[in-house]
View 1: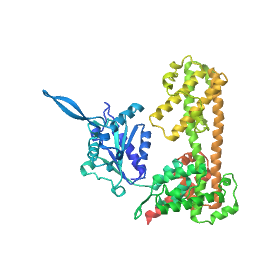
View 2: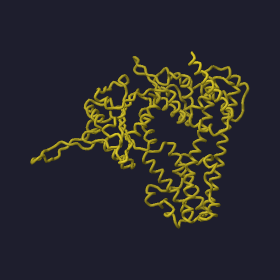
View 3: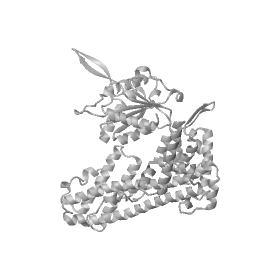
View 4: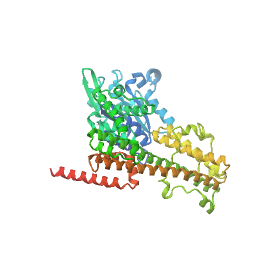
Length: 557
């Protein structure tokens, strides 16, 4: 099972285990909820998907690598207590609460999330003294005398024995009490993830041409040589940072992540050529609408690897533009939700009532609202902007509640409640670890924009609700114009890319690869569904028709 299907299956299992009946009891009793046991080679993403699953399901996550624990930290320390049995008092050995169980209760206290996932990694690599405790944990869902709280689903992961000398194989009694999922590396699934998370285009285009190097394990006289998805992702992140620092990426750096000398050497050579093609084929000028006939002829007669590298460079520029446009749309939707709430608060407070209030109020939404977004500052926006809320924002600030709670407040005070509400919601979600990095950044952008509007109101001493609406609407429309420009630029880059692809390759396999890769990127597909790029639909239709024809031929044969 690939990692994408594994993720879906774990989410389905969590939904089933956390389903309750009309009396609030779990449909599947805790004792019958088998722990999920993921078994698969290292580096394919077993651990990484747990954070994604917890965020997407809106539940807590406590993760431990069990090899770091002793028997005492896992099941607790013994102590002597007195108990009365019949007419006699006896000294009885009890145990303090396990560190792991204690961490679950701490997580519940910190986040307010009563349900979650307890993830135990490398569970089949425990020490001899801890092995019985791990078997008890899988069979009875407890460490020592302390049970895992109801509503917490157990997921464990381990590597097959061929990858780890410390592996202990579970017996039939234990295996019959877990839900076993064998996980395999799958480049197609990983590529979707790579595009979504904007991994370096050189890594993606290299692996497109050498899929066999995506995951390799080889035991040699010099030790284990390996290349893993985790290694490729970490290398990609380092390449991106090295580029910003203007530092070179050579074979020695590649080998620090891809610990398979032959593959590392091959990729290092590929990366050197990749940078060379970026200059040779004047990629930046292509996206300014400048096509050199000599270069078009040169690439049309180049080797297949060279062609794919150049296609990769073109895709990188296009995907980046389309992704940014889609992200801004998501950002705009969040900003719009707070501005709509402000409008409702003001109308409910009586400060902006009547027909004039509605007419003069800011129109947020409508046919253009969701489509038009804006750029709102850099990554340090929340730090450099005005602090709204702070650590005690919820306690000391004004309550951004219903219309009754806002009665008597002027327009500026009402807008402050919205700024504070956004800051508090962001803080709560971040504390509960329910935000991805991108969602966290989006919240920071929105908060900074709201703060900017409030600051403008203060500078101009605007307090009347209608005047506050007008100022907010003015800034909103300015940012909409910036976003519309961004969308137009993204569409233009797509058109320039098709100009180059047609001029260099025509309706060839390179064009098929270009369209296929666009369709592999969820953000690009989201953008393309809303834009009117006739050439994309033309080539995409031809590609789908060709796929159907090939499948029919395969069936006939």
